[in-house]
Length: 426
Image 1 (tube, helix red, strand yellow):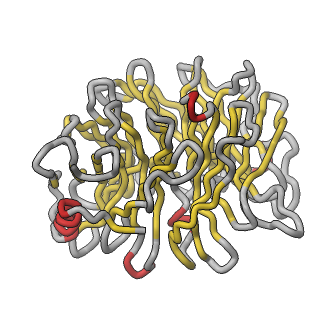
Image 2: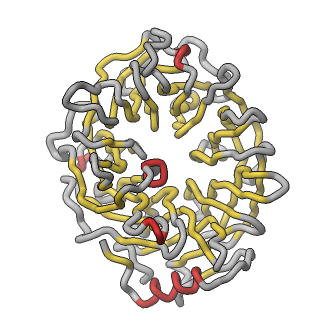
């Protein structure tokens, strides 16, 4: 892999790393405002997890903010198309909350986040927001005491919302607990447009080991849904690893469950619906792949609209050399988006040298799974820099949200990076 080699990018990152402990909403702009790197936050640490590009060209960003008196709370920011703050707010409990996902609705946004209670266990909060940042409704999902429920995504549907995630309360699935190795199940929560939960569906699905859903979509078949996640429920004597996993389900449980991957551990970081006909309508799954000695690469799998293996884009292990002996938790989050041309933007975290922390990588992959760019582009410096999400703008430019370490004390800030279609600041 290569660091971004144009002069502005090098200057921008040197500037970021040399800003000291300043906590103002500082900008780093090239001569034109069409491409920039900007970060957001005040006292303490902030992170960037997701974003929505609004119809007027503004951005709504989701992340977290941490301070000594309130712990880690959810941080919501709206910025104009040049990255200038329009409004910002924080909310949550007194403990360490996790920002997860924001999606557009017909009149605002829906978010899902993980909040921590006083006992140290997580529960889920799904919220509806106006365009001006007013929370108009919310619902909370909790499992029994001393167990966790954690969301990974929320997907708007024709009549409500689907929440994917995981829970350590394995008694929720139809079969109940399945032995001592059964420690985590996939969550599948269904809400209507007013955030009333559908009680006709099981809250959790899973096997006898560790299972998690990364995202859930509506199936083309009414009343059925597609779950994408990761599992070690298909492990056997020749393969005891985590794998990508897809399943069709309804209120009667699983049907047509399949698994994908190599003999490595594959952690599904993102699943995206690919709607461009020329690229074969279906789904793309991306995430890191770790072998037995700790080398981490990146795995991409493409399925058709009925969850059949793609003939155009077979499962592919990308030799990115993301890290060695690094934590899968550190590298696990990933992002993907389909371009207007049917190609794919994929982003994740790379740790080539654990002493220097992680970097954000960005890569463009062709319709057939062959990289369009010769090698991924890295963004970052000293300290941990991590990806949040990536989108393509209507004009082909690329926008990334994530987290970057700044200053000598490595405070973290939410970062918004705007690039041209080739990942450059020009």
